[in-house]
Amino acid sequence: MDASWKPGVRRTGIMGGTFDPIHNGHLALADAAYRQLALDNILFLPAGIPPHKQNRSDGATPSQRMHMTRLAILDDPRFSLDQEEMHRGGVSYTKDTILRLKKSEPETEFFFIIGADSLMSFDTWYHPEIICGCCHLAAAVRDDFPREVLQKKSEELKKSIQASVVLLDIPKMDISSTMLRELCQQGKSIRAYVPAAVADYIEKYGIYGGHGQNEQL
Ligand code: ATP
Ligand code: MG
View 1 (cartoon, rainbow, N blue to C red):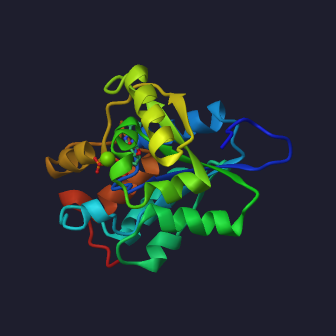
View 2: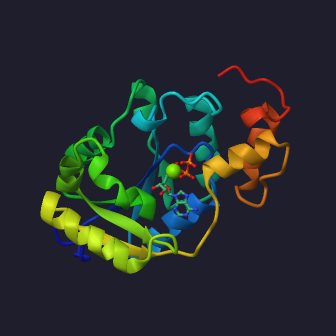
């Protein structure tokens, strides 16, 4: 698959994640992808229950994760929310979502945006070859996995599952949702790491062990 820009062909990024909670690292990754790949739009896709996070009890509900994602991208016309996985319920697999999107827009060129860590473990995902049959992978280069390592991995994936990988340069942002959940549990502020509307929502409803009102979702 050729990732180069072609006249008249729509280019859509897919930003998947648990978003528990969504944070500035996710938004910076999406912004870098939008600019460096000349995308027309990006769909944010909060996972229903990701297979590798089924047994976690300290997280937000699927509905809360979706609300936080909506709040984070509300003011940015480049970004929109895809709620399909949430509504489907149960364990969600990326390959089903990508197949659905490709089927509904066969002419669109899709770029699945992932962090370096996700590229390194990509071959352990469920049917990665199906994902790669429908879209390019756009993987962020970060200090923890230097460009040479990611280039080598991209070559391997190209041989094994015909992956088309584009590497993105992104600013280093030492933020993870895990770190933010821990800060909340310790009663510390996470305002420096998430959009204000997301911080307000987390505080208001006391998500992640804070002391807020209870929202029945
Ligand atoms: P957790 O700590 O719960 O694993 P996370 O911060 O990694 O959460 P996810 O929702 O798992 O967030 O990540 C969605 C995507 O965003 C993944 O591809 C991940 O690699 C990428 N990502 C997460 N944090 C960053 C960051 N700080 N900079 C760039 N990419 C990131
Ligand atoms: Mg992660």
